[in-house]
Length: 633
Image (cartoon, rainbow, N blue to C red; front, top):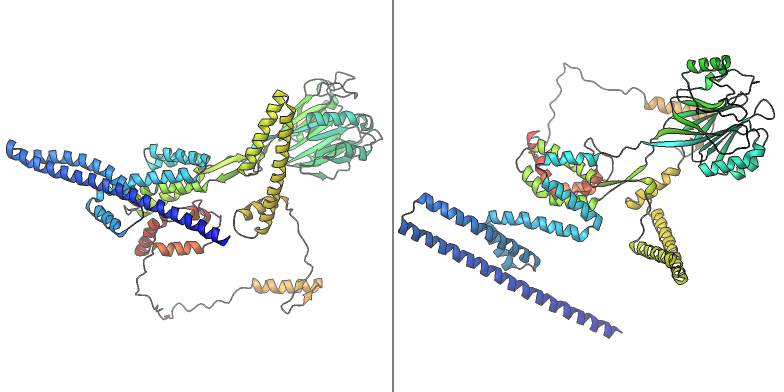
């Protein structure tokens, strides 16, 4: 077995050696060809020089005319030589370096410096684009091309940065959201709970305000609507009572109220909205002024008021006067809500909220029409996520390095520093993509995605053709992929648990998911651990020790201030006459490696984490700024 392994390694080494020798021979041939072309150009240039001298002798051309002719010829030769030299430098860089080639390259650079600068600019940009195409994904390379085109097509850097400001602005977090509320006088929930459940499930209501519920079994309602929380306020008689059901995902808190048939809740959204569910029979024992302590700047009262604002005269006048005194306005459906008469007695009275009320015109066994209410509000929760393509940022800054290298060389450090900070912040925003959290999904490996797509395609084909074998094969592939995906997610979770205290991507992902389940809570102090290691649990002694500690902590310090008329000795420093040493590129890189990669931003919106993603040779330019600051401070 060992002999076979040695023989295999020997064969592979021989193949590698042969390939290397073939490659070197090819590079040598190309080198010789390029040298011959350059030699041919030099001979043509010498021949043109001799021709110019002959023309001057034969036709008596002036020196000025001869110089113009030479300039035109020199420009043509310069362009042709630049193309050849760029190709030659590319082949030399591709081949293995040797002392002879290094010497020839150095000689060439010394002779035609301007031509090599042109070749460096164009060759480096092409190399960067090729590297980006090879290393970036398809989406990232398209983004890289878009950014590069924007950079190249703009007239100047200011117009390009002005264009990128649109991308740098974070998308607005606030969006318009809605709560769907059912307000229904059921006249006995025990008889009509099935009708309520049917409406709640078919219309997907978020809040149910039920009046005149009477006696009912709480266990039945909890079993029929398990995703709702129940808040009940009893009435003045057996047929009264108000019940409010709120979905579990909505944060609410109950406000204590002793008035019968009045249930008060606070809905915690972007701002707190108070909901007062009510049933006001003609024989109520409370007055409208009794509800004043429960109203707020953003509140809504809804239910059966038993008052028609157009037909009931004095009763309507009293209700409207009280509503005006509390800055409340009535929102009515615009049609009768009682099935026994043409009166409009079910509606909402609101302040500071936008709500739409309309009747539910389907059949009902109650003598009141249900009301469908839509409450609109601004949701300020973070509904957008973001991802920054740092590889694209790196490639783009590599592409734009030549511009900043030329700009930093002019010595205008203050202006260039401010412009570079603006450029870096906007570049990060340009490479950042925002997406809706609701549409986000976890990333899965590419092979699993391909198998899922193949399974879905087979399923559609089986459904279209009715082939049972294709359906079975699609189900088999889908179940296998689900099993692999389950194992993949388990491994990812185990990895995040292990690396949750280590800096890195797993650390961020784990705590971003975990902190959503944290609750704000407080705990009482059980005791103090004294300096000698003893545990003190006596509350009186604990208070005394805490008071002594904070008295000493916040005591006025004793500061020795010398008399102003006494001459203090002059401080002598050992390195007072020593000049500040220049900052070098390795010094900056050494400091950067020792810094923590925090995400906290400075006044320019930059953080150590962002600076770590920047190409390192940019710090070679900023080193000049540091040295300039030390010289001029």
